[in-house]
Structure formats: C-alpha cells, structure tokens
Length: 417
Image 1: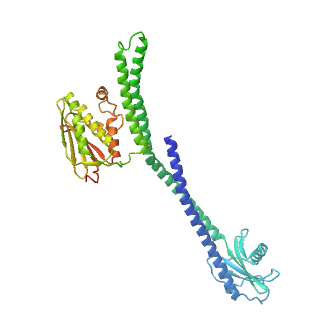
Image 2: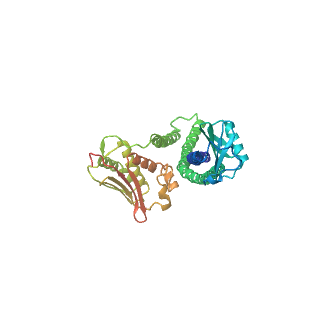
C-alpha cells in the first residue's frame, strides 16, 4: 500500500511539474515562432517598399536578368517581382537572393495559384506577400530556410530542457515522496504495532477466562460456593479487560476526534493535585514508599477535571510502582508563567535507550515487572494524550543518582494568570 502511495505521489508531482514546464516551454516556443515569422514579414514589407520606388511599372518586359544595380542586402534572402495582369513577370529585384528567371517565374506562378494575399509555399521554401499597384502586382518572396532552422533549433532546445528537467523532477519527486510518506509510514507502523499489542494484551485475559470457564463446566455438579475462586478469577480478568478496553477507547476517540483544547471553565489544579496526593497515601504506604507533596495555592487551569485527575493519578501510580522500597515520591505544583506539575521518585533511573519510547502505547521499559504489577503500558501514553489535549507539554528527566521526574506544563487560565 505504501509503495503504491509513493508511486501515486511521484506520478502526481511529475504530472504537475512537467505540465507547468511544458506549458512554459510551449508558450516560449510559440512566442519565438511568431517572432521568427514577424521577422520574415518585416523583410517582405521592406522588400515591397523598396521595390515600389525601384521598379518601373512602365518599363519594357523583363529580359531574364535581375536588376543588380539596385540590389540591397538583407539578413534573410528575398526578391520581389512586378507582374502584369496576365501573370507575366515584367521586372524583379533581388535582395541577397541567388535566384534566376526560372526561379522567379516558378515562385510567382505558385503564389498566384495559392490565391491568398500572403502565405507560405512549403514546396519552394518561401514565404510571400502580394501587393496590387494599379494594373500591376508586386509579389515579395523571402526564404524560409532560416526560419525553419530557427524553429527546429528552438523545438530541440525545448525538448532537451524538458528531458533534463523531467529527470530532475523525477529525482525531486522521489525524495519528496519518501519525505511525505514517512509520517504515513510511521503512523501505519504504529497502528500495526498498536493492533498487535492490543491483541496480545487481550489474549492473556481471554485465555484465563476460557480456562476458568472450562473448569466450571467440568464440575457442573458442584455449587457456586464451592467453585467461588474460579468465579472470582473470571471477574478479576473481566475487570482487567474492561479497564484495557476503556483505555483503548479513550486513545482511539482522541485520535479520531483530535486532541482539541478544552473549552471548560477554569478549575483549581491546586485542589485537584492535593486531593490526588491524599488518595495515594495508602498506596504509597502499602508499597513502603514515602509520599511528599508541595502544592502552590491558586493555580487554576482551563480543562476537563476528570482527565486532569487521571493525569495526576497516572503519574503518581507510575512513580509509586517504580520506586524502590524505602524510597520517596514527591509531587510538586508550581505557578510560573505556566502551571508546572512535577512527580519525582527516587531509585534506579530509566535506561537511556528506553526514554524516547516511554510515551509510546504498550511500551514498557521493564515488561516483566510491568506485567506482574498489572500494567499494560498505556498509562504514560494516556498521560501524554491528556497533556496534549490541554495544550500542555510533558517531559522526562531521569539520570543515575537523581531518580526519575515527569514534568507537566499547562497553560494557566485567564482567571489564574
């Protein structure tokens, strides 16, 4: 699919750029051809004007020789003939044209046969113009060789330019297609990985559910009370699946609708953080961790209270899970140009190679430990999504001897600014 997309992008870019260049070259070529024709027409007009004074329409019939005494030089070979009503050539003047009586008579006959006041004689390689003067007719002829040569050179140059440009366009389109497809490719890869990870996470509880159901079916004569533990296992795995599905729906809904900025009334982030810290004190105590908090008062933000509460809970839960026994978890909320929420825990730092992937869905730096603690690897991805939806930013700092800290910055509401 991605290869076809790249080919379509290359094709579209090639068609667009080549079409524009082709239109420009065609316009330039047409303009040049018209200029060449205009140059030939100027020579014809000049020949007629000069011949009008040079030719004596009342002279004797032409004796077969051109009037060389009155020859004028022109860049384009031309000649002009005076013709009577019967089509007989009375006199002719040459302008840098090597023609004889037979050539002039042949050209005059062809021009009269054409019947138009001006035009081309492709068979003779001439362009002509007719001008009537009383009982006589003047016909000027100009050589088309230079014009045809110039047009041919113009077309060849345009073709060469187009060929070279088309090769360049292809190279540019190739690299642009790679650049344009890269985000789609990355999104496709992440989607495929997301589906695979979600399927894998759902597979385990489903397997347990089916196994427990098989055990119950194998002991149908037993009472529900005697098989209580299997029922409790089914309930436990069902609740785990429910939580996973809810998390997946939350992320999918955000991806589909976009993480748009909230339009709710301002709420006290200070009260929210203080409440979360109080609710996690029993959790920290059970895990042998000291939970400290330092919450500035009067910090208000515009947002969704349930999502911000979940954000704070995710960070506290994550900090308590990965804090060594006897360690310390610290929640800090400060009011600067923006609201700054920091959750820090002591203990082993997160490996450097794992830090760039920490906010990816289903990613776990320590998969075995996460599974034993009931994690799916979605918590930090949800925290990042909530932060993004509130026009905020979430960062990570983790180093040996300093522990790990997640820093969330959120814009203050107008009321709290």
